[in-house]
Image 1: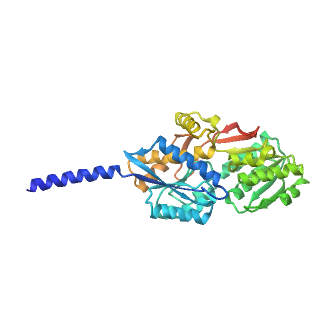
Image 2: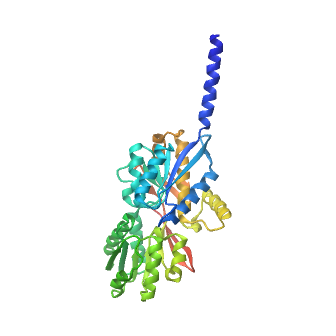
Image 3: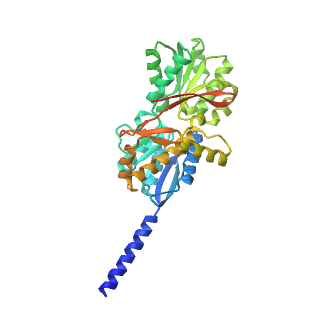
Length: 371
């Protein structure tokens, strides 16, 4: 009888272990699927969801993706992270796409010790003082410095005008870094103007810089506002080259801006012409076949956030959030869709930066700047 009971318990134990091993690994994503920066979230989600098709399981267990819409809002972003952790029991989180919303959600993930990887949140504050928050993109201090050097050395600009969004941490940080680096390099800031998210009339700002005749206008703002700034500047006869950041790399820039954004330069995470490794080539081929359009930066970065989390889970040999966090912090030379990525213990990535240009209504690759 004892032998029978022991055997039964052993069988039940094996069955339980088998069931447990097949339990899904739940990964959350909080992205702006609606609202004023919905284009970023929609592109990011295409990347994440297609990456799951490429790698649908980890450690022999299926991956279950849970998506929460932040509605492009900071409060909604914080609530989304809370729901993913408390209700969906995620072991890791992808998101958000923009810095302000990522910061809003990151505090809760940090307190609950759930690792988070942002595809494109570039503000230095995102990871500051946190152990569980990471990103697969460069940071704005690097981006702002590169933009200033690009203006001085490649565009041969001696003067620059600034226009930025004071309600977005991303925009303010980039403008500040650019200004310091441009002046230090011998350039002169001849005009500095501000606005708030949602503004659509930039006549006052452009009028104030019109008389200064800047060589370049540095506009580290999002795609909708940048398109409008370019159109209104063109209508006023302002002929300065517009230089922007990664926030403009969305199809809506050219759709809204038309000919006015021709010749615009911007620092970025990605261009399809820079793809060189096997993961990137295979993902791009699959994406462009399935979606019938060119692979873009925010899609590639969304995919990289997913792939790098799965890589960390495999190296950790566990879906335990703390072990995933430790593996993420030890990531070195990971071959992502957007290129080679290493993650430092402070959560920041070491990776190359791309410079693109709008030409004939398309984003054209100019150069890659290595870290």
